[in-house]
Image (cartoon, rainbow, N blue to C red; front, side, top):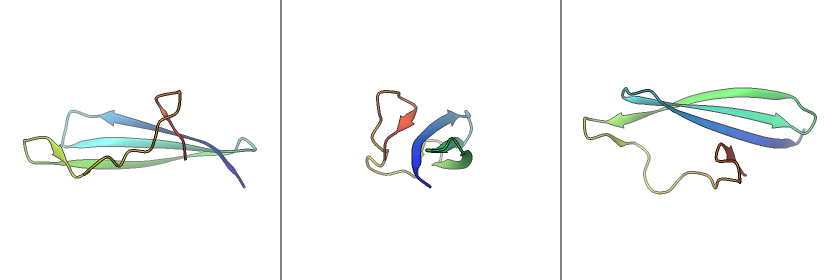
Length: 66
């Protein structure tokens, strides 16, 4: 099974959590969805993410290249 494409979507919820949805598609067209969330620290709005940890983006801003 070969992964052909991964798409990620970050949804700002206006609360203390942002949602991340991820769609993974294989070369034969089979696909699945995953989900996660990022919590923020205090009222300052800083998140638990540190540094530049985002994957590089392809031509489509919603597609992550691996």
